[in-house]
Image 1: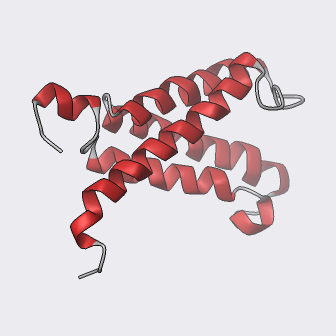
Image 2 (image 1 turned 180 degrees about the vertical axis):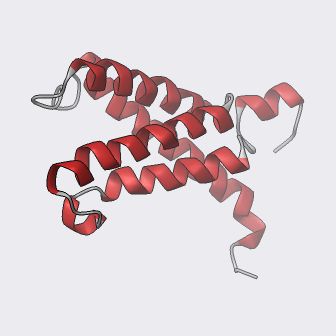
Length: 132
């Protein structure tokens, strides 16, 4: 039993909120040219397809509104991004070598959020009338 066990739900809520926020920023970069602009050479399906999933998925996860399905789609997007953007260009599957740590980490954090759901401090909890 971990010493932070009494705070596990609040820590999970912070993980969900911050993950959604940071993912949303990636979508804003692609869709709106913010934070350094669209990555150079990014094809339209990355800019508009992945950018939309990053922005909308990030907002939904951040708010805890349908966070499970949004996180599942976001996880899949990051798995595709990992293999297309990091493994395929150089043939190396190791994230430390192919610079795919962020995509791999997002993939598995979103998979965890998909399994856990919105939790406390979420729109879904408010809609259910759940306290906390």
